[in-house]
Length: 163
Image 1 (cartoon, rainbow, N blue to C red):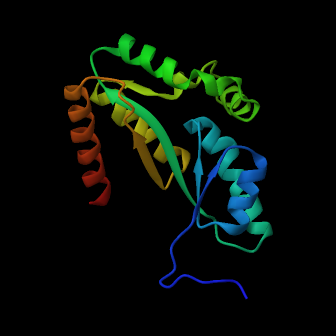
Image 2 (image 1 turned 135 degrees about the horizontal axis):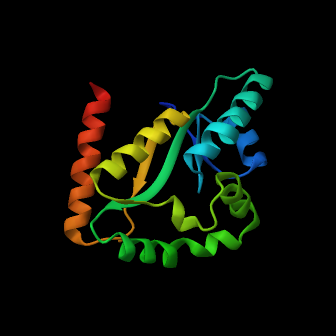
């Protein structure tokens, strides 16, 4: 007999390629696509999840996008820090395939870096692509003041989404 948890806890599966998307669709409550931009989310990730969920007779799992970024005036500096932190992923075949699907050359290009309008537009793109939720990772790309600006904006966007 399989063990149970009471109350049940939703289980999310980090996904990247076709196999983990299939497993998430068949077994998990949600998918957390890693290094997946909004175009790939809309054109590959969500259709793949939907197809496998339907084949398994399960509801579509929630899709929780994940993106790094910062609201900053120092776009070049933040982009450089993002490249140093993320570029190793581009050499891994599963992530390289996702970057190629997104038509970008480096993982750091997925980072959302710029002013408040840039950040809000990126959040909207993920929502339009079909993300049910969005995790924003602040990875020391900017100054403490930049992080405060980012948190303030994301908090405002979150409040707006709930109304």
